[in-house]
Amino acid sequence: MASQMITKRHLLLLLPALALATLVSSAQTKSVPDAIESYVQPYVDSMNFSGVVLVREDDKVIFEKSYGFANREQQKKNTAETQFHIASVSMQFTAAAVLRLVDSGELKLSDTVDRFVPVVEGADKITIRDLLIQRSGLPDINGLPDYDQVLQEHQTPASLVKKIEGRPLLFDPGTKYLHEEHSAYNLLALIVEKKTGLPFAAALERLVFKPLGLASTGVDDDFVKDSARLARGYEPVETSALAPGKTIHWSGKTGNASVYTTAPDLAKWVHALFNGRALTATSRDEVLDTSVRVGYGWFRGENKRLGRKAYYMNGRAPGFASFVCYLPERKLTVIVLSNIYSSATSTIGYDIAALTLGLPYKPLTFRKTSLNPKELQSCTGEFQFGPDFFVPNGKVSLTSNGRELSLRWPDGSRSPLIPLDPDHFVDRAYWEEVRIERDPSGNPSSIVYSDFRGKALPQ
Image (cartoon, rainbow, N blue to C red; front, side, top):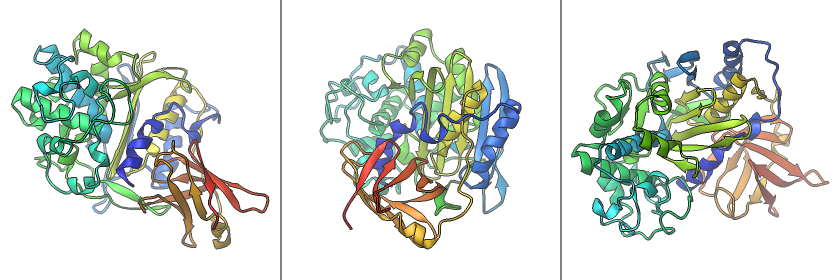
């Protein structure tokens, strides 16, 4: 799907309660590990999850299990030692490297970008803090028309920053959060390189990974020396199959999505950040600050569904999806890493957090009978959404190939829809609910995608 769609929906994926996981209770008749195991298995069986789930409370791991294959063609199974690309969760490590430089006195959060990269528009106004909390106003590289080509060639932080050189700011720095700022974290990676004199991968190894004992974590700069433990990524095909994920140069995501790690290493990182000595008290307080909802690679605030403060982040990049959540009141960490390009990881993560806390959650169930061609055809049509939709004023279509229904986006990409109940589906790629509303004649009058309603257009 177009990069605009991905960035517009990133924030929504992090809402406290997703539609498939609310207001439905499941009796706590099993132990927590057994209940988690029963909950996860339908996602695995339906090929909507393959990876590792880890739940840790303080220093104790209460659940850890691997599912599916790291390489399906070779029948190589995922294990606790399998390394996954973690997409946007990578920003936490970029932020940590910057804060380590702040702790050592080599940077200040108030420093303006023009001290390091003067060619960027507004460099004399944008501060390091603006970049870290994604309020820089920089145009987003992921939204550029040639972004797909960017990922097909080796990149460096300098070449990525050059892509936005001379482009005007979207808003005054520091004034608001508009969307995930991938360009801001490309720029932070370049600043880290300039301050350390090292390539970004080596700088993170020196500043973050090695000091914290994250021996299975690294930056994919297209030159990973030992890649035998790296999972191969896959993407959904139709409603029940998988295909190898799109091949990219991960260097094209340096700073914002190029880190790979294991679930145990990610749990160690979370513990070190919130309960250890990863940062000085001053820098740690910057990360924990709740005056802004987004910053330092985390979303944070009161989570209504879980009934407590939460720090959370998810990510998607070709072939992979990730989710991490930390609840400081219980010192509870939930990690879900997958080598399937599906946002089901967020739903899985929130449900497991709820399950662990004894709160309501909803097991995954599918419609028992498939739709016949006539039923499928009765769901088709074109629908107009408003300016607040993921793709502003976007027109989407529900189409049928006689076997299943799919949603066609404005850029021509398609999301397969898995039937749950009559006129009720889930978008397999983005794991959002889709409901069809009908007029008195039984024709579709509108569709509801997540929290947005699109009206049917005349056929």
